[in-house]
Length: 77
Image 1 (cartoon, rainbow, N blue to C red):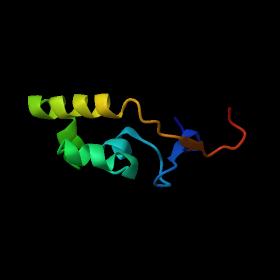
Image 2 (image 1 turned 30 degrees about the horizontal axis):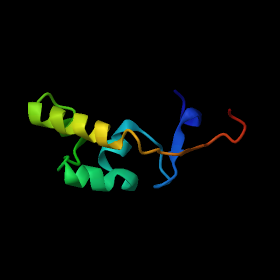
Image 3 (image 1 turned 90 degrees about the horizontal axis):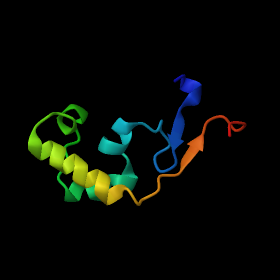
């Protein structure tokens, strides 16, 4: 993926990445806070059972939320 292929988070105006959604995105802040998810990406993804459980819960709770993206290329479909 090239820089030109990145999408922009419409809530925060930064590149939309997994790390952004799991650690910084304002749209998911409440879910992260309620589940007490770390703001350290490596900790979220480590193999400790409690962290895995929290990540799965986060994904389940946020699966129905849409995260609109804005393509950096206006001509891209």
